[in-house]
Image (spheres, rainbow, N blue to C red):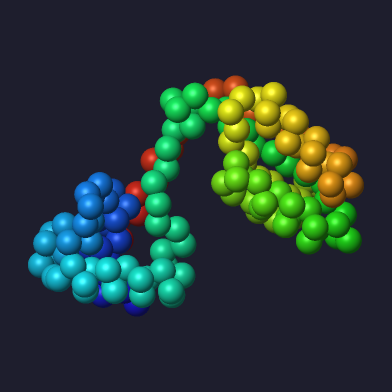
Length: 149
């Protein structure tokens, strides 16, 4: 069970994280606690798994990059190598194992779609997985999710 302070902290972090040299000082001021307590509370929520990731999200298209969703059919005996290989690419931002015909799904960002396609071929050659589908978005529907805790 989260305390009111933890809930208030989570609401600030996900909706108005301060972009300053000392963000936890600003957060602490908003919560009437010290910078150190705001940081320790955040670290505790990360350690407990309540906060899975803390970081900025950039619009890759506005920065001149291409991005895509990829799906792969990976046999059980190639899963470990495939996942490690894919995770080794700096342009991979998410990688999930899911049930179904295509059992590994990941997102890939690169300088352009040709670059991404070259890297997907490279992944296929390294891992022996030939069925990797490139699914670039045709239209973007951005959904903002803020959980009012």
